[in-house]
Amino acid sequence: MSLAEKKTRTTVIEPSRKLRFLNFKELNDYWELLLYLTIRDIKVKYKQTIFGLLWVVFQPILLMLIFSLVIASVPNIQQAITCPYKLFAFVGLIPWQLFAKIIESTSNCLVAEAGLVNKIYFPRILMPASACLSALFDFFIGCIILALMLLYYRQAPSWTIVFLPLFVILMTISAMGIGFWLSALNTEYRDVRCLVPFLMQFWFFASPVFYPSSIIPEQYRLIIALNPMSGVIEGIRWTLFSYGSAPGWEFYVSLSVSFVTFITGIYWFRWREKSFADHLGN
Image (tube, rainbow, N blue to C red; front, side, top):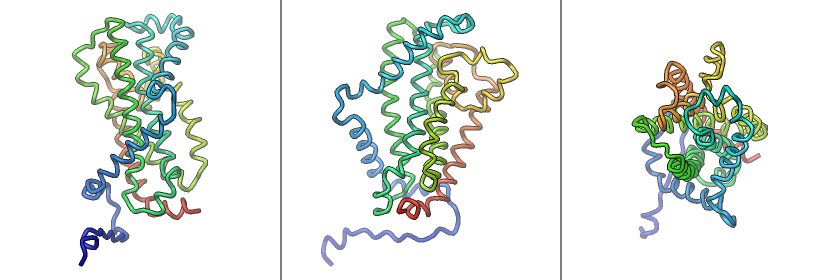
């Protein structure tokens, strides 16, 4: 047997007798592919652009300036916040940008890579996972700009900043769960990619990105809490400069919704996985 034959790896694909959550051993075998897909996504995104990574912060900075001119003068908002409004809005826009990018990129990742999915075997869940990691890279760049803004406004983070990773993880799994649902649906129903931009626009205004949730009437608090981004954005503001009170029951509602969405999203993705090639080949 030649050396080439010894190194040849054969993968036998058999239908599973039961629906599994995740095959961690298989994912570990393909971690290099995940890394490659992530780096490729980042390079393609900024290839042949003049401003490069600056595009990551152009949108939130522009929206921050617009909100500062239009929203900041509203009396109820000025009374409800304890920091400069530009900083308040930017802290809401950076996590929202991550949330929206994960959903938008994961929802279309399988359709965009239909040729790869149809020709090569690999765990299909790597596609939305790489899209998520690419969005997290943009989030990291945005956090650097946020740190510079905190220095400019002389806003020293509170000790509660130690809880910041918790809210970032919560936001990520929530967006990933939604992305799993939408990416699987998009392979069969291409209307999904038309629906997502409309959904994200509505979701943006339903989240406390540019306004504090404290101005929402009490009777609507439960509805707002069902939005996972409500608890995340308010939680991040609390971790950075102790804005508002510590997360209450609304946060735990958002936490529950996020985990349910993530777990059911993975099971849904895994259940529909066997039909991806058929739908993408049409």
